[in-house]
Length: 281
Image 1 (cartoon, rainbow, N blue to C red):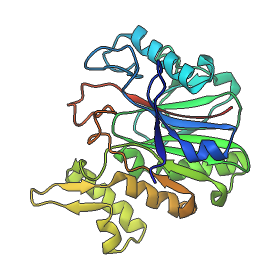
Image 2 (tube, one colour; image 1 turned 135 degrees about the vertical axis):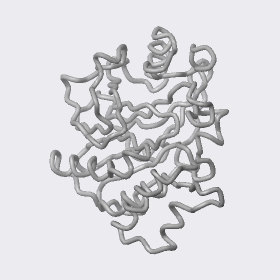
Image 3 (cartoon, helix red, strand yellow; image 1 turned 90 degrees about the vertical axis):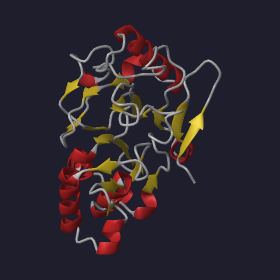
Image 4 (cartoon, helix red, strand yellow; image 1 turned 45 degrees about the horizontal axis):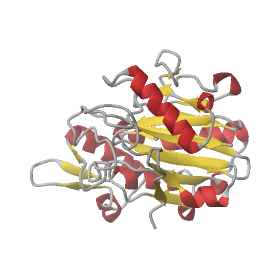
């Protein structure tokens, strides 16, 4: 069953929520935006939430306000960062609550993963094909969110996030729930030798058998490769100690489903950004 369930309410942005998590855990809000229900104009129409593209800042801020209204949390709870395709993870404190929501300069700088135990903070990360990784520990009441493009994935940002949850808040990997959100799928993600070499190195470090490697990456006749970044992240989560039964994996490809999502690759780089969010009410 698809874990990211589309929610459409009249007059609000269309959102994809992790419905099973939110049904089971009342304290949690978590999901992923669509491209529908905002005020931005083409090519960022309509719910672009990225201030770093060439959209009008006032449109982006209004879209972010609309997201907060639809989620049912105060706008000043939504906390943003400037992502750099790395594997550095930071703890978000109450002092940082709400930074970055109206300007890039005020955002958390040069980080791609975020964790918090504080209620009333909504962690946000931006996407347009890369893999959103959601983390929730219902025992220690900790949430996390990571941005995993191919660089962050081969740098194992999932392990970095889980390690920080463990060392800072006492989370146990066996208790953590993880979800892999809408992102470009193996159906559409063609990569070159530079990326493939890094991916094969990770698979070798994992001692992945040849048939396991084929679930992640396959060569093509044109010398390129088709990469399943979602499956590679799933394997890394399992390697980090997350139980397979505690991992939700989307079937939604942002490139195939450009009717619902922005896709940097499919739209030639001129497009908007979705937001993944997670927080404790």
